[in-house]
Length: 85
Image (cartoon, rainbow, N blue to C red):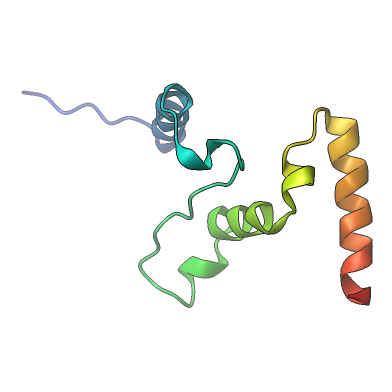
């Protein structure tokens, strides 16, 4: 049996398509699952991990925005207010 190499981006796309069909408890909160990393020093700094952490740290009202314009405005406002908290 031959093994076919599938590009990594296609595997991620397939996982997202599969996840779209599954109903999870976290689906309403629109949080992402952190990918596992082998090394805590380098792996946690990877974009794939940092982006998920940044997304999950946003308040639910921003993550559940109805449009891109609303998302952008609320995100900018949120980020500008962070240093003053």
